[in-house]
Length: 434
Length: 111
Picture 1: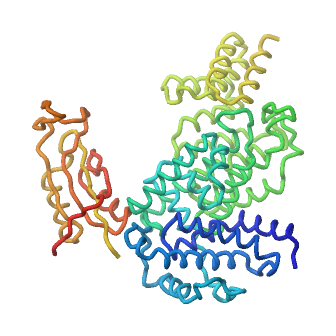
Picture 2 (picture 1 turned 180 degrees about the horizontal axis):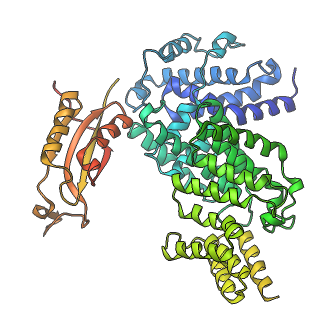
């Protein structure tokens, strides 16, 4: 018999890995998100209770799915009359789909308690429905902050209180946000199914946007003292890996994963031990995670070879080029400008134009780069964006204009909401005087 | 499966799309069986607003884009309703349409 520690570890692992899968499989039989959540929660609680005596099943996720679905069927039977009046989640049963079959199979299970060992063949047959769940959570009819909260809650199984901490909002706000989103799903009938082929590019962009947002909130929290919220970044990368496994033919899914990996590989050196921001040129490259960078590189090279790289692939290629140079000075600035130009063609964003000015300064000199930055500033494309005056300040410093540089640093300090970034900029400002 | 009903509210500063385009769109919807009802409204300068006992000239919301028409459709789910909304001439030709689920006491269709 496994001891409680081993069971707790097994349950925690299957929680992290398969919560969304268990939930999605349960939604398919009950078409009710709240009920599916309750039953999924119950199944994990039962696992903690029963696995010490029964042993950890060979297929823990399958055991949980079968258990959660049975709990859902029990609840449906108890509430049959009540349910008839409730709007259920829309999930069209396609003739070529195994759903009806599955529902009937679960229906035939004994409803009074569980058999000791769920039939293994029944377990193996349950398809992975997490993609439907992801597309439901990331439906464009929901606000992006709601998409992110729902994804963390339903796909990753993160408790609402932890999501609130991760996204720097109060627990009440987060609970209300999730409740509101679920209400809209129910009443507006946002369907639990794969998007139509014609809608897929849009819907995928929305899902990738949510994962990227989660990663960015982990990478550099927009406010608060801690620069890196490792948990958010880990969750985002896990989601990226999951989506890559579920949609192996979508290059931008791999592109986003590569982008997150290559940035995350530098996690250890972004901040000094005393919590200060470390410039890329001052980071200790020997501490970067080379295996992760190599993994990202393989994804990027594959996508570039296939042609027509998308936004995330190009961003990843840029980040990888920075990461793969033996030293900051030896970075291939010319190639970076080329990649930024390609990125600007498919994604004409002022942020990209601003970032391009950094390698441009190395290739064409700070004067030329300053001109570009000032053009962006004059177009008022990025008002209140702290990185614009920060980049400008650095160029002015290099041009031997410390007075103008100081003004720009002070502007950047006023604009940033991040404590670590503020300290870094203050340090740069102080250096000007010396 | 039971269908749901959605209101499609058409917003435009003037009428976006010609009457002919709207008529063709309405016919397509009627032929597909999705249409429950559709109304084009006279322009907003013909509107009168009532609040309590007060009667004032003009539409309630003082915005550039006002409701120019309304249509009620039947659809399986939001994606199907959005599909219908995207085909609406107002949405395609410079205006916007808002899709809202119809609540409660729905009109029972008699076919």
